[in-house]
Image (cartoon, rainbow, N blue to C red; front, side):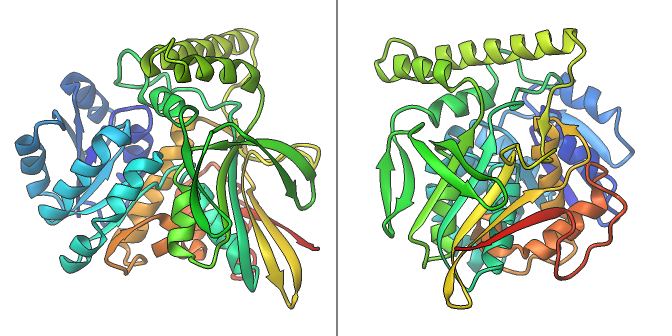
Length: 400
């Protein structure tokens, strides 16, 4: 299999490439980046399967030519509200399977409309195979399996530690920061009372997580809120939530955007500088930074989780799922490695559906967590994967 990694030398893509080059069924990985020097320099640090070249993804002819000799496209080029739909369309029309880390809800709606075209050409596209969305989708799918009926599905994550990667080929404002501002301003789409609704982001929601209790979180504009109802149509409520410190400052910055005092780009630059300064100060003091995906104690809200609420054996019940992790991990690792895991499942024949899907619509969470355990050293090594308990994750169940 030949893989085209768009943005493969960037802060997210590099971890997907570094992991994927170890897969036996992959013969070549072509790393494409607007910065040719960065793509080539990064590729030179990888194994013989990996080569790099410069590519402007806004040049449709060049993009499609690069896809012609490729079997699968993995796309980490953001922001996805700008680049996602045309890249997916090009991949399908040139005969490629496709995976990305799309974390914008607006283009997700547009990209799901390519389902019939992809299905008719026997091609598979998986949208949002990163951290959130991605890992959260698989946690949600695992939680749903534990209940007989599900009415509410929350996916959530901590803002603490979600800082841009230092090892990125980007210059200027990070695409992840532009995305964050987009999803904390204006209105975002959730699913409530059995129907899609547009609401203001950062509205407070109280989460009652089994084994922990209640904690305050805020609505964030990620795609899980729309993809779970798309694939599980009985859901009455679906939201993506973020928690952590710093929301007081963020809310004021976002208000300045809504009041048109700041542009999205200006606000993203401010958030990026604040985030980088905090990380540099912590590292100067010898404090490790990153996303702590493990709950060190039940006194901590889960850093990355899903919560399904519904019925089990005729009574109200909930199931929360979180990770067992071995250490702090970077935002790039938490995003790029799941993308590589999705790629492995596709080339190994574990994803059999054709069309365009979010992860929960095409991937069995049992297969995903088993593969993630096999390819990653980020998680505990000393436990066997069992069919009943996906040892990579913790289940917290409550009969209400």
